[in-house]
Image 1 (spheres, rainbow, N blue to C red):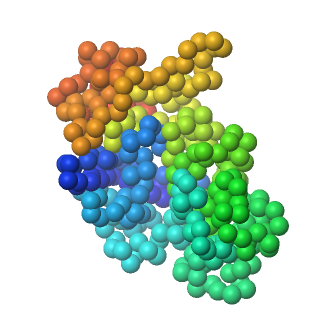
Image 2: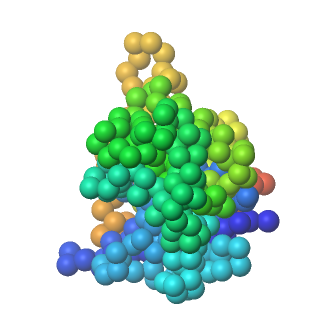
Length: 324
């Protein structure tokens, strides 16, 4: 049974230059203890879809036009701000992309770690302090009793990301959303962070949504994968199925652009062109102008292709040109 079930989520930004169709008719679900990967280029709608669930979209200009997001029987999109505050940071936590901008530079790590405990569990004083020290130790920060009194600038990038993970997990959430937590980290620290998230997931049984543009990371941590392009899911499948038998031309293009798949000396494959301007979305298949792997002449041009089950458990947009 799904812990989170999102159906037909549509989020748009109403700006002076027009309406930006950031997320259009997106549906997915996450089961307890499982990891869902959401992958795609920058601007594909990955982060906005998850920010919408937690009420983190600035309104205005953002507006959730339609959809439901049922978390353990509660619709996050219609439950009201008070009810959402009781879930956000307690039962659902988020690791943001840049820990330097997510951590308050004027507050010590101790104050930032204990704040969720004070708000959601009414825990203060020594009890909160000891829980915070324990959380730092669990994410592998040495000498946590000393480091907890430091400021964010006194930590390296990898250590700041560990602090963010500790902060997200300190309330023992049921769902953890990771928004590109390994971006700008070197390969060694990236592996440490991924191992840490997996370890905490095994111990706590946490469901995870992993937002990334890195398919190598997806291959390491995810059970199921949603591929997003131009605000829509273009393909969705279990990880092994997606990597062995990708159907959509965009997914195949992403996989072909992985450097490890090239022979030494071969030029790296890049997807030509740029994603569409979502303030003026194309009427048909959004990937049509960049499609070099399928048959672009067969792409739908008058309406957005529908997401359909092509094989059992394997969904893709039914665009003949992208499936060719």
